[in-house]
Picture 1: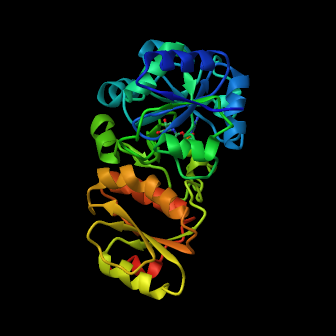
Picture 2: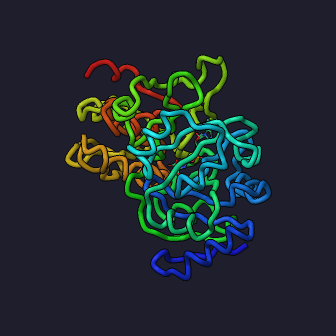
Length: 342
Ligand code: TXA
Ligand code: MG
């Protein structure tokens, strides 16, 4: 199939994209976090196409994207009181919540779970597209399974050209890492994935909120809470080596591996010796670094390097979300010797 490239600037393009989705096709579209691959969430056959295009295993459930409270009501069982507080404080925005679903949501969307993840994107193109279809859109990140999420239309085409009906090009995604995922189905809300809405913000709105166990396994029901928590997610093909974020430690590590062809995701102004450097942005400017993280990993991954080296941000606001993504991208190949000396 040929993938149509549509510009979001054109109202006719939004209409055309909406027609494709209503006819059970797939359209990639920008959100404030990353590009999503959208299909009609109420049509099991359309949703199956998403799994096929991405080569995503069917046990990994999808997020349903909406534009209004009215759209949500028929899709879920009674939402807990916490949902109203979150809706008022953070929606639309980069927060996904997991709620008990109604029978309207096909099992393929939730991988057979009783819960469904829902999100109200803030990006105007995403909002216009959902409104034009009048449908809830199931949309995972628009990358091949286990690859780095796309933050530009080019990234989407690199992974999915010829596999989807169309892409709405809306430029770069401003946040650059996926939404925070918060599960509201238990006694205490817990974060399954870190993102731009932080633990502190959620605690301020709700009181007690906890982080799911970072290894993603020893969760209180003993199972895997969210398949996306598996390690080796968001991964470049090249080996990724992480060093706790300090210039000196990173430079020393670069020296140690200097026999290999080395690339670095390097904060501006830091000095290390590497064959290829991606100028990442000012260290501690987490918003900037998050927005350039996946572009940097994709860019370095194309340079036929042996190793990519990167500093790990501390658990500090959006730094924590970048840290989580880098750890997953590395398959947790952390240089522990450098971990505790900063
Ligand atoms: O920012 C985002 O969330 C982007 C944009 C496109 O909205 N979407 C995104 O979707 O990152 P995806 O499919 O790549 O990640 C969805 C995550 C996965 O980790 C999945 O396992 C989890 O949400 N998830 C979905 N439904 C769930 C459910 N019912 N219970 C627990 N986890 C769920
Ligand atoms: Mg994804």
